[in-house]
Image (tube, rainbow, N blue to C red):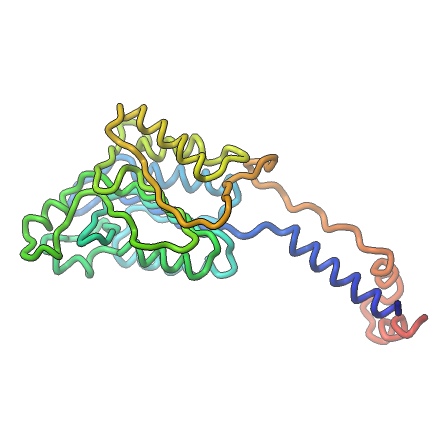
Length: 295
């Protein structure tokens, strides 16, 4: 085999090793809305979002976060999330705050929303499926965690003022019609109401924080542990639920992988041929050509 062919194969091998050594990027959008202009204050969503964001960073996620966001701020955060997802392997969306379903479609409620009549819904709230679509179009794995099933006045107000069955607002959130490569976790069953909690975190967020970084645990097993904790803490009044279409096993922390991010490992030592090239030619183009002509 000629020297040029050997060098080509050596460089190709180094490139492949470098690609394999780099983990896939994981990007998260974490939102907590608690201080509402028209619906009072929820005690825990901001705490939940802050703690979840810190936990995700500790296991290697890039995190975009925002708290007590109005409609425009929320849309800007989603746009930044969409940009950050380019080239990522995993996308995650966590939302804590008020949410509701209308005609089977789920919505995030910004803190400045005024939902006194159904016609304002599209102007004031953000459909969750639009965030999911952004994730599914750009990543292989899309994860959604919704602690947005709290008993809220928006659903009651819209139900009182609705004039058609198609605009009926219901408490809690609805199951998503279809997903592709996604895992969606709800803090409670479809149509049910979740508790805000009396401590720093909601029951759902507290359970996630306890279990999400356990090494070697699949996301399905994690949700079993989360559900068990929440059911116990709420005396069986709240039961987390999930739906998914993942095509392979997903773990937040692989078995043997440290929870805290570490510095990248040193690059592998170059092969003998590559080392010879580096010693012989440096950066000079003429020297490179002379080296390649050698037998």
